[in-house]
Length: 106
Image (cartoon, helix red, strand yellow):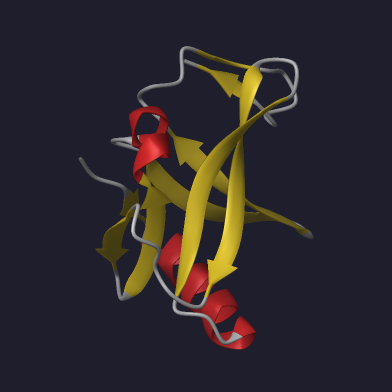
C-alpha cells in the first residue's frame, strides 16, 4: 500500500503543516457530492492508532486504515494555474469523477 506525493505537493504540505503547528496532513474520504466520495484534509498534531503513515520528499501524510481501500496507490500533486491552486489526485481506485472534480466513485 502506498501514497506518493510530487515535490510540489510535498512542499505545499510541509508549509501548511509547519504553519499550523502540526506534524502531518491527514488525507481521507467522506461520502458527499454527485459521485459518492470526496477527499478530505486535516492538519494533525499527532497520529492516531488507526493511522498509516506515508512519507515522501520530507512530507508526512496520514491515512486512517478505514480509508486505505479508497486511496491506495494514489499519487497526489499540487498545481497552480493563474491564481487558482489545488491538489490533483491520480487515484487508480476511482472509476469515475464528477464534471466539477469535487467527487469520485470506486
